[in-house]
Length: 496
Image (cartoon, rainbow, N blue to C red; front, side, top):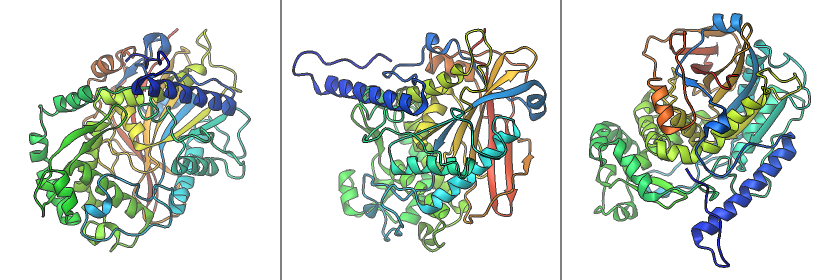
């Protein structure tokens, strides 16, 4: 990926002006992050991660078991990339009222805002993180962290800022820690590089890259997901005449009558049609359930349990697989965050391969959106499967954890990557922190990561590992409250 073009002359084109404006926004983000953390962030114009920038970071589909981890490794630092918590529905296209026959439930906050319940769930998750990292010796079991030990940065939206604040409150109660964010801005290029104008997307290439993954058109996909679309139609009872006409279908129509297409410009590429509508609705149903709405209001009582929602969730994971994980789109939308994560880990190691003094940052928290997490998964070829969700699903407040480990004997470094999320619970009670580990009998989802990484993220390379790949769900449980954890793989970056 090349640098965004700079404006030339006194009357730049719309594209070059947008790139120049995006560059200015990115420089402002760098300035504010530097002020908040004291360290200049390694975020630049949109380009693929380079080998020079990463010093040959190594991605491998490997799992270190807990016994080996405790005996052989010490945790140096961690980076958490989290989605925001439970929010109210956002404004979408087409409007929600036009895709459902029944009125949607009301919410206690404006559209797109984190709810008080979402904040409380995030606080509980933060308390789990504190115990999790205190148990590994990274954080103290009690009290406030030392200055510089913890840094948090959030996207500009209320839901991301308040989620970060709630996570910090749960991890460090009474310490008054607040996340940094780009004040006075409508977009942060760290989380939205295409919208900020720092990373151009070729609409034609984006469309073709999606179609190439599904055989050239949506016929096979629509046929494969016919059952899920029919289940969603039974819940929504779609569609309003305006939606039918916009899709070229005669009214009245159903989801099955709508056409599917990849549409948009260089800063907003999206999917239109039945998959997109079903994806939006499925995510709202999950939010309604997590918010604790009465069962009669969760999907109007027609799919009010996680078991009933699972076929509907498949439409959401399908859309995200196509629009967020397709390598061309994932790289352009996820490069700044991947670069930030790896630069943060690299900053904890000096040029001689030694861990920096304890005063260096121990925990970095970055709070954005489900799209950010899927972009990272798509770039690095990572997949996860939690017991309570579908493969690669990104529920509210779910997060990728990148843990920098140091081998006690050799001094070499590795990175353990985990995905952690709360189960879809309808109670808000403190969860036990007793962790139980169960081996998954399913085959590892991480396959050919070396090939995918080399192809889709140049500069990232991998090596073989002596540890046999596996997937381990881990959870802390108390009655109906539970945390799901899946340890994905090991990265061994920054060799001497």
